[in-house]
Length: 481
Ligand code: FRU
Image (cartoon, protein in one colour):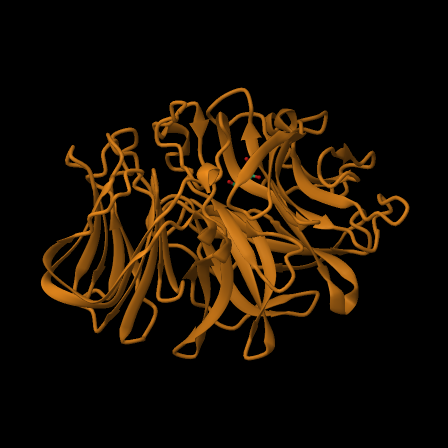
C-alpha cells in the first residue's frame, strides 16, 4: 500500500494536493454528482481561485477531474452555483440537449486594489458535455456591480410558480434577490437581512431552498458569515420563512445556526436532486484554514447531509442528517441493547483505521462523553452535559493545536430537542468528527490533528447511564468500499 498523506480524510472529499475552500456548483446530472470547489492548484494556501472539479455516483466515492474554470481577464473564479437549464432558457443548449450552466463571481484583484468597490461581478459558463468542459459566456459579466464591495456567491434556482430564475446573492451585510427569464439578464427583486440575524462578519455563500412542513412549502435561507459564528470564526446561520418570488419573510427573529462546530462553512445544496435537499460544506474555518498541519492537501468537504425541518416549541428548525449513501462504507456493526456504562466502557474493536459510525439512544440521560484517544495522550471528547442541556466537542487535548491560538478549544451547542430520549449519530474520520444529535436538530462538525491516529474509543459517565441502543459500525475508507 502507498503511504497516506497525514490526516487526510478517508471518506470525505479532499483534493490530493493543494488548497481548497468552498464547495461550488454542486449539481446532479444523468446519474453523476458534480462537486466543484474553490481551488488554488499552485499552492496550499488561498490564492487566485479556480473551480476544481470532482464527480461521484454516490457522493461518497469521489474522483478528481481536471480543473473546470480558470481565472481570466475578468478576474479569479469565486464561489457560485450550477443549474441544469432544462428548458434551454439561456439558449446555450443544442439540439434537444439542455446545457449545464454555472453562475459564479468574477473577482478582479486589480480593480480590488483601486478600491472602486466594483471588483466583484456575476458571470456564466456552460457545458454541453455533462460537465466535462466549460465555455465562458462571451457576454460576461451578466450582473455588473452597483458599487458594493462584497457582491458575490450567486446561488441560482428555478422558481416554477413564476417560471423564472431566482439568484440569491450575498451583498456585504444582506442578501439581495434577483430574477431572470434566461440567466443572462437580471432584475433586482428585494433585499433581506440588514436588520436580521447575526452580523459579526460579512455575509457570504447564501442559499434559498424550499422544504415542506406538514405538507406546506417552507423556505429556508442559509447565510454563511465570517467571522461571527457561535464558537468562533466562520459559520452558518439560517432563517425559516416564506418566499413569494420577490421577497423573503422570516417567521421569527431568532438567530439559528446550522452547525455549532467550527468546521462546516460555506455549505450550500446540490441542484437537481428532486425531493431530496442535500448540503455539503467546507470542513474548515477561515480562522485557521491556511495554517492547519496538513500537506500536500489542504481542506476537505463535510459528508453530504440531507436537510429537513422539525418543529420544537412552535418554532421550525433545520435538521441535517448524513445521507444514506454513506452506508456503502459500513462494516459489520456491533449492536447492544440496554448497555449500562458506569465510569468507563471501552468499545474494543478490530478496527485499526479508527473510522467509525456510532449510533446511540439514551432515555433521560445524565452527563456522558464519547472519547476518541490514542496512546500518546491525545483525546477528542464529544459529550452531553445535563445541567447546561448542551452538547460539546472538546479538542483542547487533541494533539497538534498550537498552529493557531483559537484552535484548541471546547465547543458548545444547545440541545434543542425536548424529547426525553437523547439520540445521536457520530461520524469519525481520520481528522474529523461530525455529531448529529436528536435527528439532526443539533449538529457539530470539528476537525483535529492528533500525533497518531485516534483508534481507541471509550464512553465515560461518572454518574452512570444506560443506552437502550448502542451500535458501533466500523467504516471502510471510500476507496475500499
Ligand atoms: C467564502 C468565500 C466566498 C468567496 C470565496 C473565495 O469562504 O470567501 O465568499 O466567493 O470564499 O474563495
